[in-house]
Structure formats: structure tokens, C-alpha cells
Length: 478
Image 1 (cartoon, one colour):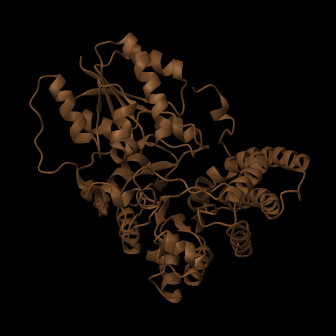
Image 2 (image 1 turned 90 degrees about the horizontal axis):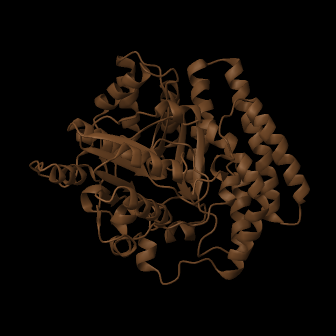
Image 3 (image 1 turned 90 degrees about the vertical axis):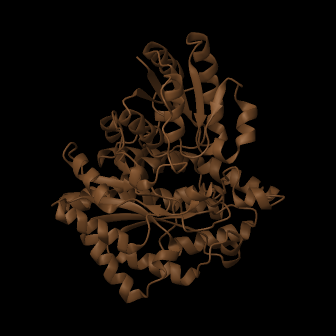
């Protein structure tokens, strides 16, 4: 029996929201569509030893590793070398964003016996399998599947992820209409960087299928850019045709919502709220005009801020992406921007941790000679983030659960759900207040107060039903 193992590799970076490994789930779905048996392994959940032993016991002919960032590469390489001693005839394949955008670096890191795959790997991986199986290659007129050719995800462990607080993640499009200089998307191969959406009816059918299997009808669309607001309305109409009551969150571009005048945006957002939109993530990145220009984000800060407030007034939770620390930052600018966020109700503990992180091959990496923080900013960043780290660990418990709680609030429409959501937000605000104080003056809050507040808020968040284990990544996953 020809078997394939697909592995999401472990990242040493900060805590991440619990989520299914959509990349390898997508690959597995396509392989299974062509009657190839495969099994998924997730190093964000399981230890190194357990994963290696399970793969060796499964006995695959091919092992594929998903490597999104360079800090995943070490885990993939370590596993590859160990598994090679146990399964000397296995074929190793490595793909993911890191390989696609930094191919020469990946080629230097991985052994010559491994095969590197760029771009989305469904077609390439299938043909490698067919080559090993001595079957004819699949011929296609395109290098990659279009979104309308994507099979529904293969989700053998979805219940496990739901139990640790994850929503049901969905992908509905690829690419992005933005050209931000810190983003890697514009520098992907052309047919991957161009925005292309999946047919909404098929998406609604997949959601209906998942609703028939799982009690919580809460979805999160992981697209960098879900698309125009009328596409959200199309989804709501399709869900209504199927008599589905679903709550969902998604990502929008700030430029999309700023296209509308305030009265029109208010009406649209009320309709979307009534149709199940519970939360939006919007990558603002800065309220400073010089910084926005540096990032190639053509936004009016005042117009953007007003649009965010309209969404929030419609009853939709708003979470914004913000890059507080970057090469243009000064201590004064950091405090000025933090104050503006605070005064307008958008400051969070996570924003203080938000230093510019660059994918290999993005615009700033290609164009700038110096993309590092100034020395004094780096020192201040380290002083602030090290002090508030205990608050951030606890903040994640509530913040990761907020999308689910807003979904439950919509689905249940009860006073109990409203009170629970409000209580979680209040506890997060306590952490945000201390974090803001530390940012403005690192000596204004004692370590003892931070410790005691973190312990109390952690206790309260678990009382309110939050499920994320903030110690999950402290176990020996490496």
C-alpha cells in the first residue's frame, strides 16, 4: 500500500491561536481524491518523539513537510534526519511559504535527497506520488488548482482542535488586492498573488456539511482578503437558502471598508451582523501617515478610525493588526501611537508585542538596506515586552477565545452569552491597562502587581469558559 505522511512542522515563534493545519489538510484532500492514502501529523500539538514514532509505525513511502517560516526549517530537518535512519527508502518532500519565497536558502538547508516544492503543492505532490507509483502524471493546463478546483478539506482531527478552542477554519480565496511592502503575497508567483475567490455556493455547501457534523456552527475565514463586502452578503444569502444559522469571522482590507460613506457602511454592517458576521480582523498597521506610506498602505487614518467605530457600533467585534515597532519608530512615536489607540478603544496587549516580522522575499527585504530596529528602540522593546510577557500569556487565553464567544453570542442570543462575553472583555481590559502603563513608563508597575494580576485574570477567564491552555507550548515539543 502506497502511503503518505504530511507534517505541519513546529515553530519556535510566539504562541499562536489553535488552528487546524489547513495546508496539509488541503494537500491530503487532493491526494485522497486520487485514492492515495495519507495521514496527517501536527508538531504544534504532538512531541517530536511521538511524531517520529508514529510516522515510522505508519510506514509511508513519502513524507511531506510544511515549512512556513525559516524557524520551522530546523524542526523539519531534525525530523527528516531521524526518520531517514528508520525509513531509509522513504522520499522526503518540503514545501510551504519559506521554500517558495527563499528557494536558494531552503536548498542550502535541506539534504540533496529531499525534493523541494514551490507554490501550492497539490498538483506537484500528486505527480511525485504517481511517479513513485509508476503511474502516468496528471496533466493540467495550469500550475496550480484554482479556488473552484479545491476539494473540501480533509479534517480527521477537527474535533481535537475544537476542543482546544479553535473555530472551524475555512479558505475562500487566495491572493490579496493590497501591495503592502511588509507582505510576501505580492511576490508570490503571479497566479498565486492575484486575488481569486471561490464560488460562494460551494463554500456554503461545505459549511452545511460541517454543520451537520459539529454542534458549534462557528467559522473563521482565514483568507488574507475575504473580498468585497458584497461577497459577504452573497455568503449570507446562500446560508439563508440552506436554512443555516452560522456565525463567522473574517479578514477585510481597510481600503475596502473606507470606500463607503458612513451612513452606507452603517447600513451594510447592520445587515452583515444580522446575517452572522460576528468579528472582523483588519490590518491597519499604523495611524501614522508617514508609516502608512512606508508600508505602501494608502489610507486616511481619520477615515479608517471612523470606519472601525461604525463596525463596532453595529455590534461586530473589531480586531486590528498594528505594527507598533518598526524601522521608522522612535520611543516618542511608539507612545504617541499607543495613546491614540488607547483613547479610541483599540489598544491591546498584543499590539505591544507587535514588532515588524518579515517573510523572506517581501518588498522591504528586497528593497531596504536596513530593516532592523534602531538600537534604542530594540532595547526599549525588549524592556517592555519582557516585563509584560506574563500578562500576554494570560491575555492569549481570553483573546483566542473571543471569536468563539462572539459566535456563541450570535448563535444563542442570550443574556448568559452576552454576560460571559462582556466578562471576558473586562478581564482583557485589565491586562491591557497594565500593559499600557508599562509601555508609557516601564517603572510604573511592579513585577509583583503584574504577577498577581495575571494569576487572578487567568483564574477568572477559565471560570468564564475559556479553553486555551497557555502552558500548552511549554511542554517538550522539541
